Length: 402
Image 1: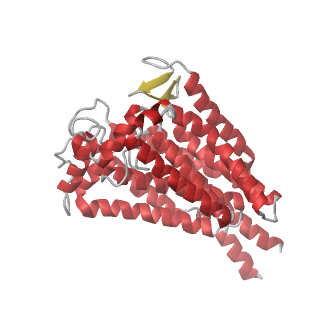
Image 2 (image 1 turned 45 degrees about the vertical axis):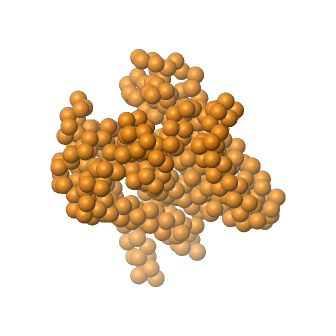
Image 3 (image 1 turned 120 degrees about the vertical axis):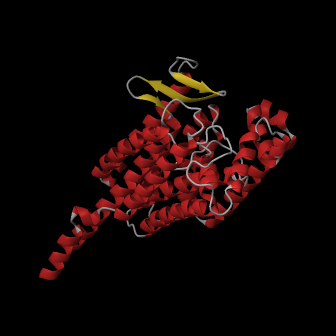
């Protein structure tokens, strides 16, 4: 009995409940990010020192993780709808706010995605609502299962209807910006949560088949029915160019295909071991953000790029393993959504750098420069720390009660 009490006390110590593995992975990402961003600025085309700014964002992000870890999953469950509503309100405000130079809403290359707020500065609301959306979706699905213990096709259809409403509300605002990349992230998060929600394959198989056909149909129309998509479906001309430049970038060497051509050239020129720190030769605009992977490939070669990909694999494996060990439905869906969000970002960003996927402007998590992106990811990771920290407390409390 004494040994059991001592084991419980030892395991419930805060230091033993902290996820040191995840913290170490974040530290490695911080070192990689700051180093690569510092090298990306060697051409001197920017006035600000983004590597130092990234250090500042990481320090601030660490406080976000600490604050997020303070609250337990039950508290997040209670405020999930409030945070989701806040995110939707920010997206709605972005749409109605006056846009242009010196205005509240900032417009870049025809996209209205940023808010200039007093004191806070410039933020991208769609980045933050990703995590808020995951919390809302987890609250919705877990509450549905708690209310409908006996699962039927009718209850599964009802759940899908609820999920569709929660998805389409923010998605409508994001598509309007327009922001195709973030829209795809929301769809990836939703698909992952649907897969683990226990919905019957009699529904999922036709649903995902229809989604595949729809995606292939949109790609076909982007190539052969542009006027219909532009006039009827509301797509923009620049979105078509991204598809063309992805499939045949060398036909657009000075336009939409320029970034892809230079990114592949940079990665290929790195060969096996790369050119070394600040040995980069190929110039790529905005290489400290969306095309940061091309800097890694050029300066550290196949080996360096493989190590970065391996580190992401370790992170995703760690999150997946943690989700499989959870008992609370809400925590499981939160962990699933965050894992899907990070995994999709990694696959899309690296894929667009090597022409496997079209360019969508999605940053590489924890490595690309950007305050909004990093804060959003750190908030999501803070939720993971919270789930891990408080999950063990609850587990041993229940043992004591028994």
